[in-house]
Length: 632
Image (cartoon, rainbow, N blue to C red; front, side):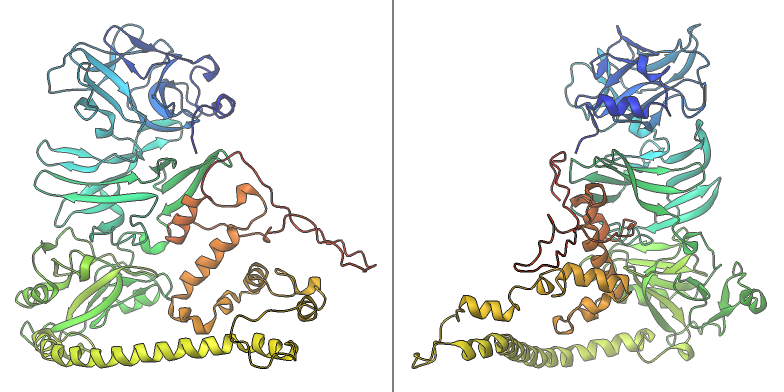
């Protein structure tokens, strides 16, 4: 799948973003310029593989001119703008790189409207547009593209791209963050920004002005706690780096045939989009905020938001609404307060909450070396400590996060999340939760007993499993064996212990002379037909065989798998997801469109032999296409 090299599509999409009426644009056929060269309005640079293009454009209905970078196949998808705060008012702009390695944009009177910067000495510098969409300035005699003097990825606009770092260089103080456009016609800095908040333990936040609007949360080793489904997969690899020199988040593409971008809009809606070559357009696979619970601190302090609850805001155990009358009127902003004060002694314990988005970490404390037991003990020693959790959920959990005085912006998630321990007095503890230090000691004493018991239980499980397999084999042979014994040749003196065989007449009798009512996908309840029928009747969970053991899986996951399966057998090519989309769908990241009736036949249903009814049911054709050579 490539977004390049299609002149017909480029012409079609250039109505929204014009390059002096894009039809007049000419490419230099180069991906770089030197100090002796320049880019004038109407000319463009194109990256080596033809994926990205740099030139002058006018966004939306604006008449102003800007230097930007866009996908060559989709010019309206602008990923970076140089002079976003200062527009050109005419088409006489020129972009060049000087001998000091600085990019300079000048107007007709040679006044500088925008320029880059560099702190390193340049030697024969060139400006080059890479296939990642990154514009770099480097020394001409240095072929290592990582040794650049300047790069556009350090100064992002509203778009987060693969390979781009979102966060801080702690040595230079450089803060790389996204900022929305003011409007679709104006690329200047808007109201919304996405950045890494360094206060307390680092976390990803979206700001409206200077106030937090939404919060992805802290990194737990796999993902941000607010978005547990956005974990590394065969399409994306997500990484969070936190050391003495840098704190940043980035993602890389594991599948180079996929084109994706993350955009924060002028209205504050953040979307991840993927290019679909079937429809030649961008498809939204995730949106934030997706629901009310993603609005920062919707329920106030010391409260939990759960979108599946009514009302969606609840006070944790040991807490009550600060203003009950307002709370009952769904005015939750004042949150909850403790019903009973903490004793601040060894009698306090922890109420465990599973599947949580962890609270705001801007006033938290962390340790990478503590385990959970040490974390809880440390919390109990500090009377102002309110809650604790593991810093990293990998390998059973490690590290420690502590919150003090209050917790804010908590959420109970429908899928994923991690364990959070909220400190409560002994009187509020349940029998099945951690009870402070007394329970920690008790857990250690029970380890020995647990190990011995587990050996015995494991043996019983293995024995039961083997017995169950044997029974199923006998049951599965039942029908075939009865039918076989009924029709086996009488000359056989002893029972044949090999694989049973059947005459043609026997098979014809079993299928009612090959009746169409028993064909796969019709009256015989083929898997696709049955899934579709039960789906339309809102009985999808009945598809699962109880003997399979999958009834224990969350119903949302089962329904999602069936939903994706139905999308994969749609009649039209553009309705069927490609492999990368399937991965994102199953991972819970992608919005799922409503499936249509499956299209899984390659022709017509022919009348039965000897039938005069002429039952001419026309089933959906499989619209085979070789236009996209991609795994499906």
